[in-house]
Image (cartoon, rainbow, N blue to C red; front, side):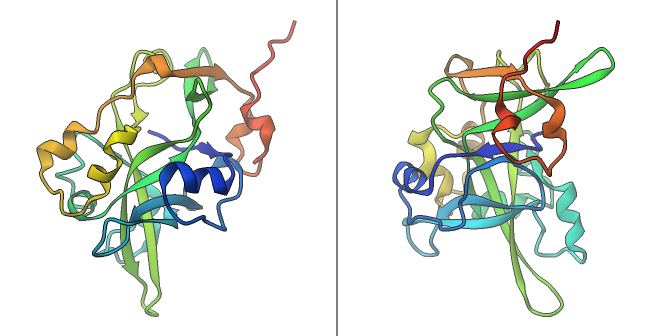
Length: 226
């Protein structure tokens, strides 16, 4: 699964790279966690114009009776996303890009789980394949939420973890976002591990385990003692 990631790039760079109006709420983040608002891109209804929007991480299906279900639905597996009741409608009609520039994963080493930070070698921002949904609470308030899709690990990730988030190729952004594209086979073809040769990973301090830490210390390479 993917449970933490970063988005440090300034709003102007994100708006230019992903072609949408600037998000005023997209402040640099070093330890993004579930239930928080995260920067996403989707198509405006009835058009192919992109909009930036902040969505709650943890998808709440429209039929849910309790919004806390979102904490169990932060990730969707690529292998079953088109089948699971929680995700299949969103997979066909409501897909988004979740903006990031790195993510964390934990590798078991003897009796501890060592966090690793994974990013592009050139440090550029990228986009996770995401799904979004809306849910209306008993008071009529609409909550819009999202989930990340995960897939098998690439060669870089295999020694660290058995899953990784799907990173969408920039040439495929519009196809992924287009709600008119509902061919499951074509969509599934986009849910592949990102090429490892463009990525790097290194261990970081376990302070990232605490969501209250959200600064550059989270991504500093771990300095071995002794």
